[in-house]
Length: 347
Image (cartoon, rainbow, N blue to C red; front, side, top):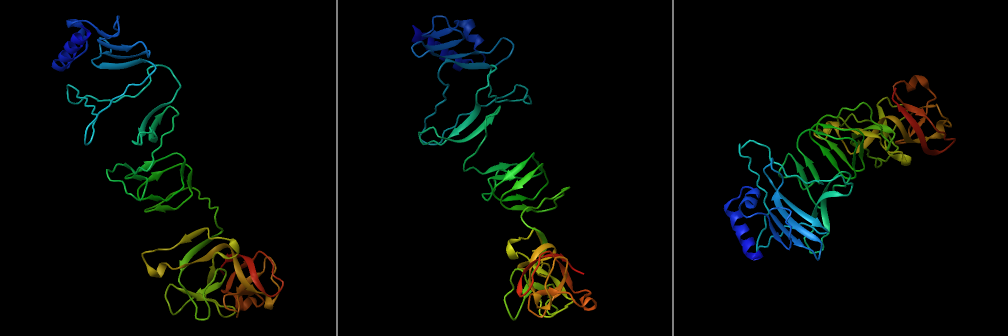
């Protein structure tokens, strides 16, 4: 009898895809292992304390409700030799009404709420998750595109168009080609911006000088960090290692000596005349090669070029030093040659 009634129910459901209230009108609620059905179709398993219930949610809203009771889960399984699709196809009668897919808890609970995507290897290992109400959201080996159907394989997150974030932390490469509004930005990798960046304050914690990139020429030796360089009149936009004292073409110090790194580097990669291979400090703190044979170096001493290639010396002839000063010493060197911390201030 139960089987016959179930067949009748299924036939009616197939012929009348309207509401479960129609079933109750024709034959009443149907129970399978349920003597007092709680809905149009109530399938229970008393031994496992579980049940499956299909009904219309209420008399004023036209939709079906599928419920499970007790311990267990509601599973939708589809088997096929090729691809599988489980489709939800809401069709508002007026053609313009809203369509929703709701995933929520119907009671006031505080447990985890998430939509999980498993690996598909039979282990139920979760590869990706969309979580709400404090549950973390994460994606594994997935390139996410926002406003693009074809996210670049070079980025895990590819956003086309303006973006706004709160505090943003990245440990890889962050490339920006549109407008981005953000709070605190922490980039542990590379930050690439194609366009303009407007900020009230930039805090640089990895270096202490402002440099530009130049090609540095030298026939006597290879350019090294800490060397003083001058304008190369034979090559427009390029520099050369200094070779004479009180050289008014002095331009800066090759950055990076003594462990003090470059703080900011400027250059225009599209033009050779405005770019190069080496960062040259134009202002800020940098270690510089110094020769103390012209006098011991003390903090505050003015420094200029010397006859030792790439080395600075103490200014002793102030009339000759005009226009040839590289900066002020911030540490000492009593004799010989060595590195002195210099505050680069060309004058």
